[in-house]
Image (cartoon, rainbow, N blue to C red):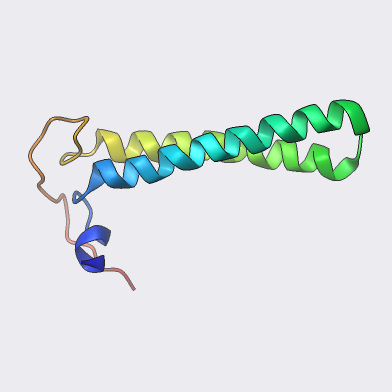
Length: 88
């Protein structure tokens, strides 16, 4: 099961969904830290805001990567792996 999940081209919609959920979580954390920094000006809130904002960008990139892969529901293609990958 894990090897199938880790194989490139398999379960891409599921992988994209997990990254999509991470986008939502990171966006909420970024919004909170930005708002909190506006009121409290603590340096760690500024750092957190930057980190979580970058995480949103990264997770959007990963989500699109998985949803554009052949085998994802969004691509509309049958599930065919591009290459065989094994989890370490």
